[in-house]
Length: 425
Image (cartoon, rainbow, N blue to C red; front, side, top):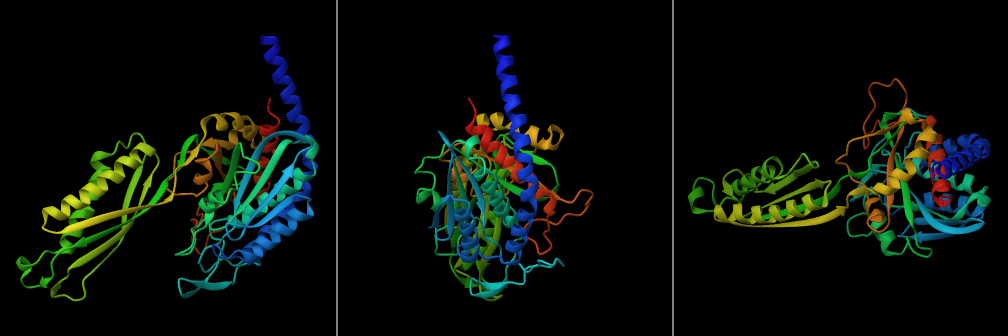
């Protein structure tokens, strides 16, 4: 038995070494293209569900590679299908393509000066979260793999997804709409991989976590109804502002006193409260909106139920009424344990074991989670910070910046993971 295991190990190791040697020339040749694509996309960003030129560039590239291409998926999404020379499983690779309503402050030759309309206002548009790098990386992976169909046992589906940052109000979009429109079918996807570049992780490093990596995001709206009265005679009315304050205080006890934070983190944040018109009027109503972040499905269910109960009960205790409506924005970005274990040797080989590190979960959210609800998925973080940089700027800010030298590792990792998954015994 030991001899058989050793033989299998040596065979797979030999395949991997040969695979790397054959692909290395293509990786070297593709790097300048990937950087060029990324800089073009950075200079020409488009907002969610409005990625028309971006989609056109992607589709043109995939068609030139000989892939089967579908456009107009979930409004502006593009899907490319690469069939290997031998039958087998189907793997999906996903990149998000939308930008944010942010005015760029970086002094770059490819700086964005694009403006657009967002919620009725003129805004700057910037790839302030690195989606331009994700798109360019996946375009590079498509080009490399298209040259090695003989090494592919199965099919690779390239998903270029719009509106990861959320569709405009009143519209559907993003991963949820792509799933609804059947992006994981015809052919049916067996597993999906994705990555996100990080401005605070050094170039050359990969960060990952099995299980819950990023939080489920939910929005909530609380409407409080009291009884209007003169500000000088509060005993004649029911103060919805006071009730709102008690509700806000109560909600935090769900986190601090009722949630098992040794299991996973959770957050309830009230981001806005609106009530009243002047200083001497106790208003009739108040409205609060906020966000919920959870990393465990049982905690999410319990937290949601407690919020509804607590809001109604507190309002009643002070003589008013209140409702709490909770709406899902994303699910938990949950990395399949078996898939992570299967792909870890590939990441270690490509990046070097010292550069592949486990990280703690984050309360940020990703709609990649909607794919993972349907099929096993693995989402990981790619380093984009120039080594030695002590003050990297956060995502979603005007100064967000990533180093182009980190992109090639993304191309290599997704390419090698695809081949290793499809060619596994």
